[in-house]
Length: 314
Ligand SMILES: C[S@@+](CC[C@H](N)C(=O)[O-])C[C@H]1O[C@@H](n2cnc3c(N)ncnc32)[C@H](O)[C@@H]1O
Image (cartoon, rainbow, N blue to C red; front, top):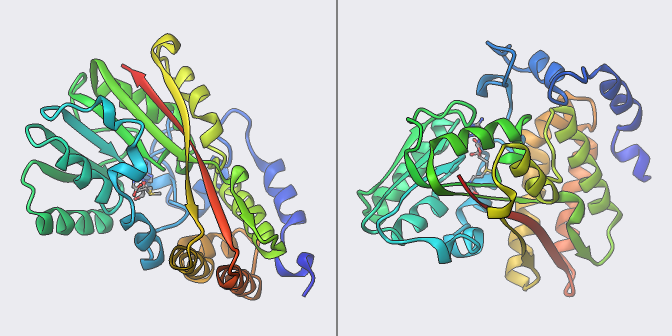
């Protein structure tokens, strides 16, 4: 099958881009047409946005592998054991609970828009036996906390899934105490690198960009974090920008990562959005899943994900 027949993209995307209103976050018009309408016009509500990956088992499997060490390394040297910490967009909470382990005298709150994933987070915290961590449903744009509440406000892989990441960063700044820390980390899809060369993975990466852009999100968030944090009103002189990576190259890691994406291509919200926006059909998505599995079989297969990170003072 030729690349252009696998993914039905170009014409549809041109039309979608032309429909955007430059006064609104990219894609908000399209998003609202697909999801329930937003109740206000200044910032998108959680009802108006649809998290690209959703919470299919293949997505949660990837999120559950995350730890404080592999997802918040840039923050760890700044933690004291009595600090209060908010994790915004905490997902199934493995990073949240791991951070709570490092703050035994403090208090940790994880919030997420999805009640379903919060159930998984609560179960995880119960299994570990921590009582100083709790999980609440909340919208990153309207956090249900007083001003100046937390010593640390952290968000991992959240801003890439929001149509107005700067508004969310302003909200994170509001609930951080003056002088407290706001710490954000996001992947950058255009900076992902892999070997052996695979036209299928190249198509997957292109499709991922097209789908997320169609829904108003920025998949190349990593490189933009430093700019977004500045736009949100933080003092640039007190920011520490950095970058770090994940790498999947051992046979076990390759199998795991390839399988996760093979399933996401056909069964996650990403697959649904790709079809809903007319960017790919079932045949194209099944082919991409096969391409992921083929990549995972290569004995010299290697995949790296670059992340942007910023530590800022509120
Ligand atoms: C990629 S996951 C990251 C989960 C977790 N931080 C981690 O790294 O394992 C993004 C999470 O953000 C949540 N999310 C998306 N939009 C949100 C919003 N407006 N407010 C709160 N959470 C949101 C999703 O439900 C999802 O669980």
